[in-house]
Image (cartoon, rainbow, N blue to C red; front, side):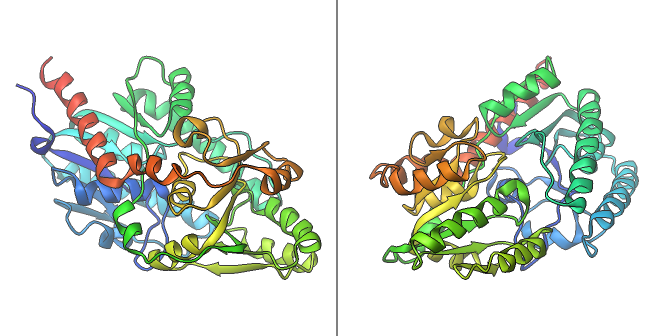
Length: 379
């Protein structure tokens, strides 16, 4: 007899999480943190000690090495240590789960899923890393290592996982080529609409735009320098507030100083309430990202009724329709054209985005896990 979602025994491997209390964390991590908190079952979780505070309602927790300084090579070493620790934890754990789920396609998450005992095993993959253009030597090394890691992980996924959870239809089509024959489910990332509704409404500032994301070149942050250099000449009162941090922040600051730009404010990490307040008072949201697994920040900005200007990625229209104003990928002149001439905010965009509220997304993932477990249990 098939079990419903509340009866499933589930292990979630979040062994690669770099989250820590009081700091921002990636969208993929947030999806699983919300699932652990809101799901009908109480999953057991393999997680670093530094991220344990994000899962207060989890079942049994298996803790691995906390974050170190998080330099590039420090992370590589950290992930190796965590993979070894997860192997020994797997040996000591006698339980066989209905489903084990890796929170990412990184080897540090999928290797534990391969080791641990479960009837069905899967992984969450929000996007496949495309070809990237490096802006400096450090970035070139980081991109090179990421490409190698993706090839290794894909080989492990073929052997270790029975199913995949993809972030969008485009990623699903890519994975069907790389992982033929494996069932692939679609899962939106979603956002906390109820929390956002509690933040007081702000008067929109027509001279204010914001950006929210990691300070890395693939988010298009260096394209924003070109955009804001042009606007400094044509609209001197216009200002951009950038929320987030990352490995290329210092290089960005150096370039901003070289261009003598005074119309960009770097706010670093701010609280969720401060972030939503900023979105609610910003008339615009600038998001020239070159790659996204889904687009949580874009969804939040649309829900806060910002006029969103972004590069058009393959999967955006299937999720967000025509609500953002789309520019050609990598074309800052077209980005500026769309900013000046694109459509106004739609009265329907907030209502449409409500379909990606967290409880609805959690319900979808619970249904996916119940479905894959049932196929195995009924065999």
